[in-house]
Image: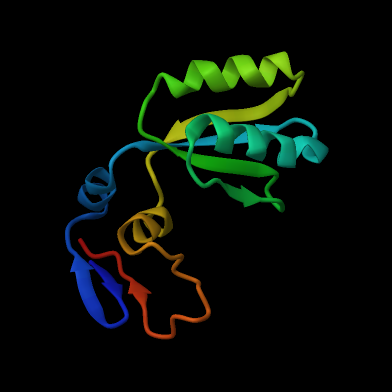
Length: 120
């Protein structure tokens, strides 16, 4: 179940919750970490959605609702000479599900009573 500010907002298995939010997530890791910001800006522009950047992992991710986005991203990265260490399409994480359902991250400091619980 997903609990936000002490209130249950969604229930189901992890796979059901992931399917409910729809789409998948594209993860891109440039071979050159210095090009991470450039890759993030490109993904945000092409997907028209907020990206998540993990500088420590050297990766950027964006929700994908239309698989036609993938060839566009691959072509544009290639056109800009951004070599990739990783290019992965995957299901969203439970943290990403929480964000999609609540509109805020599970680790937002200004939200003291929220939980993300995985039950089976």
